[in-house]
Length: 374
Image (cartoon, rainbow, N blue to C red; front, top):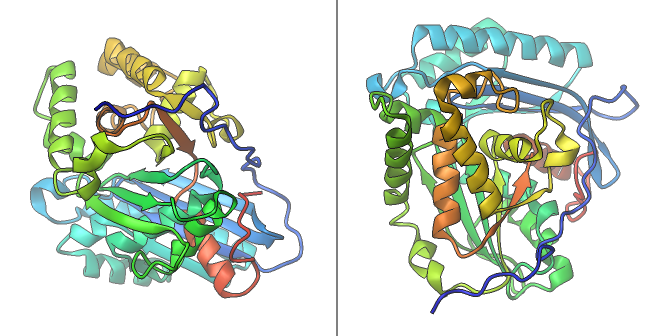
């Protein structure tokens, strides 16, 4: 029997989100979170502000750390040099703001590279920054808790998707036993781990880290010249990788109360394109709900543009045009497979999760009160 769909355009209404801007410094301790991924190096500096945190400074730079990793199994010297240069900028920002509390993490590219330990020593020698490699479960967990404010009170089954440069994390969470008003807070409590759920709490049904992200999936099919053919192959290959994800077999038995939250540059770029934003505006994107039809329409537009048209499209941007179709293949596959016609867009992820966990551990932010980013 076909699954029932959420009725009405407001089945999962958009939540109010705060602007994501650099604020003037005020009193209070500063915290930093850095995400060194396969494609980008991104950092936030923030301070606790009541039940939220206030962003003081940020940094984002495409470093293509994983370029060539698929073929060689190693991080290349040019990629490492680009990354170290970006990290030196981050170090200067940390010093300028006198940040003491920080967590600086590397993800899939460094997990996979045979020379990642040598690279971390190089980072320490050249920048003095204590970058550490985290495992896939911690990466998924941090992304999940960052998305907690976007969980609807109507949600009984939740899928959080984090499309990265080198991997894609999917976490399926059962919220049926949680009181509707407590569902967002229940997600935050998963910061301690995905196992041993508390009575009346959120239960992780399954999670998976697919070793395909926007950069690695693109690299696997870069020799396919036909644009639409390459897109179809990427979509097919990604779906194959979901076979061992337990809820994949249960997808057609789902019902109302299912919500997907997507967090990644792919998701926010597709949302910005849907809105026709020539200049990105987080306040319009974070918390937006898109339908499958709207997502498909944007992706069809991307395909119609072709590689040259996408390169020139201001909605996509020069830094993402080469990666947008591999990300779109992942996104469209997920929307086709799972029983919903809606996606909640999250402009938040690993860095916000890192900040939240640090602040809660230090007792400067209420563990059940992260309403958003100020």
